[in-house]
Image (cartoon, rainbow, N blue to C red; front, side):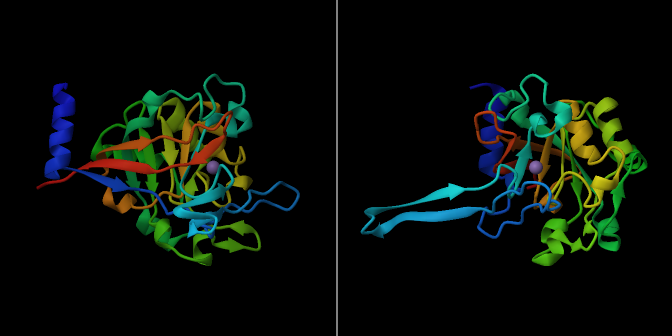
Amino acid sequence: MSKALELLVSELATGQLEVVDLTFTLREDSPIIVLPPEFGESAPVRIERISRYDAAGPAWYWNNLSFGEHTGTHFDAPVHWFTGRDLPLNTVDTLPVGRMVAPANVIDCSAESAADPDFLLTRAHVEAWEARHGRIAPGTWVLLRTDWSKRTGLDYANLGDDGAHTPGPDAEVMEWLVAERDILGFGTETIGTDAGQGGHFIPPYPAHHFLHGGGRYGLQCLCGLDQLPAKGAVLMTAPLKIHEGSGSPLRVLALVPRAV
Ligand code: MN
């Protein structure tokens, strides 16, 4: 075994490295995005029992599943958006597996998001974060911590008559993170990588527009970001290998160093 892997195994065993789950349980009431009525909608999650030690299967328990690709804690591939439709390796079944293990930068905007559900992350916020924690390295994730995952029921989607009111990035910071920081992707605790009102931005849904147009990825409905350091965690993000899939629910795990 290589020295790096020996150290990994040993630090996991001693608790110097902890595995933190950033995933919501996928369940029939998992929140899904609601689009204006003229558009197609994602189906809700369905978990249908085939058998559970009964006449349909006396010794075994199993279920049939159905869900939209963009359900629960999930991954967005570049082909999800029109800006990424012609890129190579843009579907979940073709994206390079080497990119499924990468460091995370966590920007804590929980206080700002508690004060304002329409809080927008700007380039100035990220530059202030970099002044404290160092420059965001190429090929790494940027995760927007809002503590939104602690909300329950109707407060999570936070729908008004004029759409959702949830925090997210503005257009300038997304274009800049892709072009000037060469990030791997952007992750949020809310239903989308974009702010709830992101459809009114220029361009509409700028996180989707710039991330996927640049061949980058999205993570949504993350939880547990309050357990991560600003820098120093490594994410494992392997979406299901769906043929020509635009995204998928997945288990997001973080390797986190702990002082023991
Ligand atoms: Mn999505």
